Image 1 (cartoon, rainbow, N blue to C red):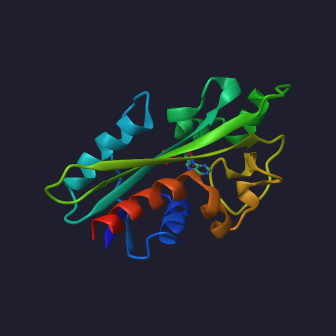
Image 2 (cartoon, rainbow, N blue to C red):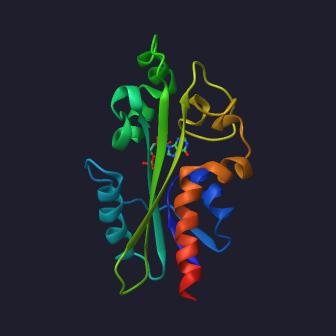
Length: 178
Ligand code: IMP
């Protein structure tokens, strides 16, 4: 059993497809303002480890748009809440270079141990319109191939996503230890 501290149902659903023995804990933690996802996750995992008794995982992700020098990056949650997908599309009006990637950092800790971290990325393009309602957050504007992540089923998203990659790396590490 692993506790997964998140308030995001979409993240939990994706993680559950990788770790069958996951228990979602919606207890919140401090997301510090920092320049990297790793720093945010490193701070958060210490906080949740002090509050839960057992193996704990958190995950922090961001969308990095190449033509916007990596924006919104570590500010992805704030930007999603404020200008949202429509705002990103507007910022990119007239831009031809639309490469972007999602990065995910997962942090994991067991009682009395040092936290470990794994990351994953998925590269794609910011589209010209929102499509699909299956995912969450930026999924409707992030395209891999012909379709957006918002149009893909969880299984399909999990074959390619940043989160699936970081979580599978943790899973391999846990299995390799047995
Ligand atoms: P956080 O990891 O919860 O801090 O996520 C930062 C922001 O990126 C939030 O607004 C999320 O909705 C968004 N986000 C994180 N992961 C994904 C994803 O897999 N697809 C689309 N948006 C995401």
